[in-house]
Length: 105
Image (tube, rainbow, N blue to C red; front, side, top):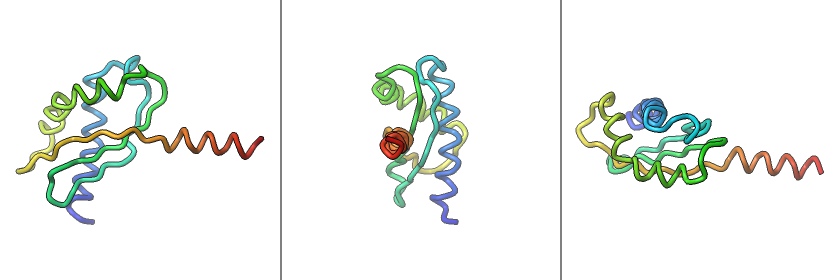
């Protein structure tokens, strides 16, 4: 397993924990950090999040709280170069549910 893969796994855990600390459950809904990709030069950490419920503007507020989340993450992950966090909404679950509905009908 490559170093970036190991780091991505730890990022997944720490980002989920940091989001839970920053946002109450009624704002965030139920969310899952689906995938983390860290670029080889450690310039970016791309984070895909899927969620159910919560506020509609969650990803906008997540973007505004990015620095606070990053501080929480980097309290637990010590690396020389700290990647910039970039959040993406993962629609895999919603798409799968839509396809399942189409198949049933």
